[in-house]
Image (tube, rainbow, N blue to C red):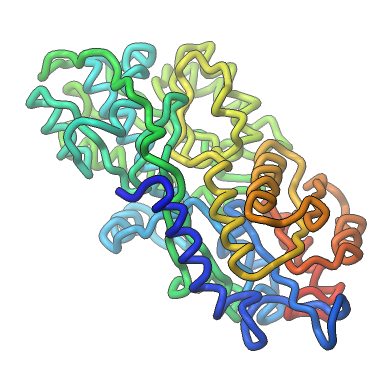
Length: 446
């Protein structure tokens, strides 16, 4: 396991290698460009995205060939094995992306293992074991392997498909894997260009592994019931299929291995919608009425903030595969909220390393005005300043994702004339990038 400064070094090295061939790496590199600025000829303007828009669904919004060519960005992403991808596709054929599939899978595996350790499916009984499942003890990489360790009276250290995990005291990964993604000429992600890096420090993992485990062989009359709160509709709907696939696969494999405490795990699926609707609250009410023990979701940090209090007040565990806002690190959740996605403090490191190592000296950041957007924007800004950029060389702005247009925000970026523009958003990012293209920023410029 690479940790600490070593992980940080990997981030810098990986970004530096990519800088030669992707957006902003030289005169013949990919990426985007705009007329004007200091110097003769064209000024290179690099466009970057993050996990909310770095998916093939973004490319489907464009009809102009090469409109996204060279755009790069970061996302919590693991180099998933071909075997895991095959298993996902067998349970959910036709997947286009795998974003957060591993994190969703791991969320359910961790919950099931904690329930086994507690000898109970009561959320307040097994939640104290969740952190300890991810560090210390004997390493294991599947539910079956970890269950064998528990059955023999041992303590498992689950190394998930989404990374080393190693939860901190607030119940979130201390170390995470990030992908540096790049769009190709066909406006889809170029899998061959994807690079992976680790960020974080495993030394920050919690030290308390939880109470003493229950006696091996415990059983329960009550099955472990897991509800999902995942984006089947709304502006993150492109994340729905891989997350649903991860959830279904985890439950299937747990039950194939004998279930939890002598009972098959039950899965109750639900839609989170997005922050512009009340879908999540309605789904949570339904799931609580169906007596779920764990709610996996939401994907959107903004959505989770609208329902976390209702879930934790009910004494139910919430574990998100995709929440990244750093607000959750200190949230008063009664010890019932966890996440397998890393906080934006880690993604901001990977993103700022990418920007710096591409040689950008001035950076504009456009972020949707919600906890995810503003948090990642501020953390990225702080990391860029720590890397040596001056405060005056960075311009940030937020926007309303429901706005009729983004002309004003785009014009602010054009007038600032930065070396790089970062777009932190969801599906509305397509309209912003189209607007940048129309202003001469991007290969599809007029």
